Image (cartoon, rainbow, N blue to C red):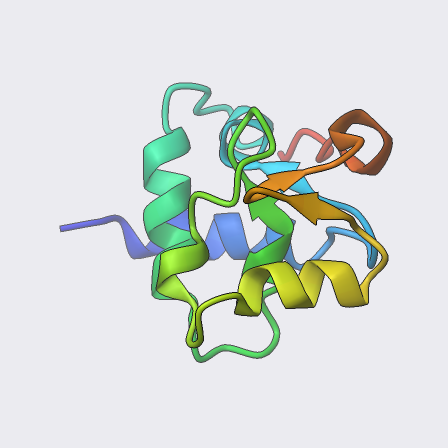
Amino acid sequence: MADKNFFERVYVIAKQIPYGKITSYGAIAKALGAARSARMVGWAMNASHGRADIPAHRVVNRKGLLTGKFHFDGTNLMQQLLESEGIAVKDNQIIDFDTHFWEPPMSE
């Protein structure tokens, strides 16, 4: 079973992602001092659906791919949410990934 405390730590960081910015599963894992736990961050994002306070749509893979899009209701909801924040997406990938990328601060 996944560590609920880890999930809550992921959510603390996810809530800090600024509007119009994205980060990656790996960047969140690294900020938590668990650099090899990107997949677990993905599980946390998947488990966050239904929580309006968690901007899961702003978390993508390290190449800018919308790998979590299938966990959102509707075919293109993740892309629509990102585009509504001014982030262009083409073929399920963030355009200008580096421009929109937000590096989470290291957590204590």
